[in-house]
Length: 250
Length: 314
Image (cartoon, rainbow over all chains, first blue to last red; front, side, top):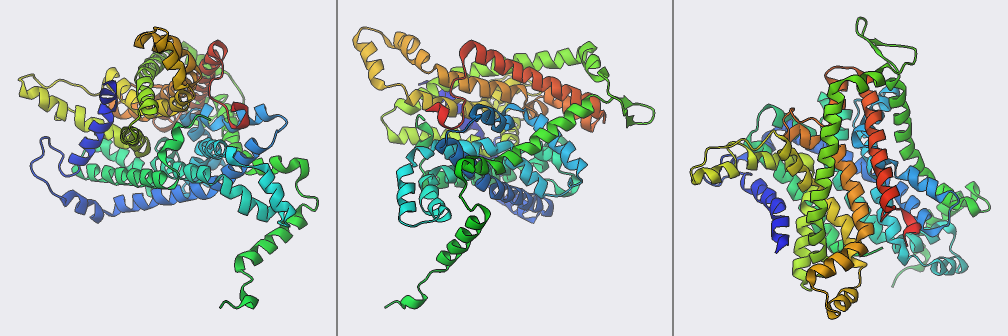
């Protein structure tokens, strides 16, 4: 079957990342966890990882409300100028990443906020926001306007209606979108590379810099950290909304 | 028994405050403006990008004075004319364009059967397996995956060790054009499959069965039924893969080892090695133009496909 040849590269990378996690030569001479102990001991890797987590959290905190509101608005209302708005909101996808990164770098540099970590979080939110909007608006089919009216007629105010009726209806989309945003932000490399300086490197940038100088086994162990995060995200996604949601035709 | 006097929940009190604030801010409710209010935060976020583009446009029109290392305070098209006269620009543009087209064709060719099997299989275990095999690399990130390829394809790597067992000298598999394309295809495959899968789901299985019962064999069914009906998905996936690989930075940088630069790498070098912000900005504008033109051509020839946000899609 062709699927085996297809998933082969994926699985090979996986296998490689796992086996090489212990020793860089191949075939490996023995199984050991010493490189895992090594990376736990390495301050700069630990700091980089914490910074990456911070960036990802900031990204979700910003994009979750913005993307959810926009996604609901786009699918619930007929909006005048809707096409123009769509083109505008898809800008982060149509502008190449290097363009977005450089543009944000110049902009942030101009207003003097470069060198902090939170602008990196904002930047990853900006470049990935269409994913969030997409996730929410595609789950908004289960949004029943009559339910909202019913809530209103039972005396619920607009805020309460939103939190108790509208939001739960699009929850699968919100969860999917937030997980996507978190993991994409955690992994974001190019925009991070452009926006950080030597004091605040994130983990992907740290790995990239190390690859360029010398390939050491501790890098493989760090890669396994990413693989573990990815696995965790997939398990969460599968448990909370089910992976099959991505096969649904919209 | 619960004490009813204290059971007015905190969350209700919060709600009351929020309702009061909302009523104060918008006495008549949002009315017709509601969707616009809801879109505002996303608008502001994307606005940062728009401002950034203006900065790029501005600095692409200023030329670097090599004696003082200051940028001109007048506007000139010199950076663009320089970009279009230098051989170097054509080399990297051609390399990126050709690479992007190759990667797109290969990725779609691999993604189509993958998505097909994933959607059509009756085994839920196989489907789950295929989904996980898809999401894991998608969630792992480019740098780590490129690093994996370094381990596999390096002169000390797995492949060379394997062919060494049958007595073949180690060959240099890395830092060449095919390695970059290979890495890109593997990077793009999850994007391709995820964009294709919904379009595949939309094809009713009965149509295929009908074609079969009318005497069409397997290849005819694929060619006359599945491919035409998957077209919107193929266009959507194609555009995403095309633009992402055209503008990629990490794969050429890591698997190309500096000898196989794409446009994005050249732009990075202009900013961080040569410090010629003007020329780098001009290259960025050119890249954006090429990318938009390619998307425009695909749109005009094939239509917009599945690429649309919100309700227009349904």
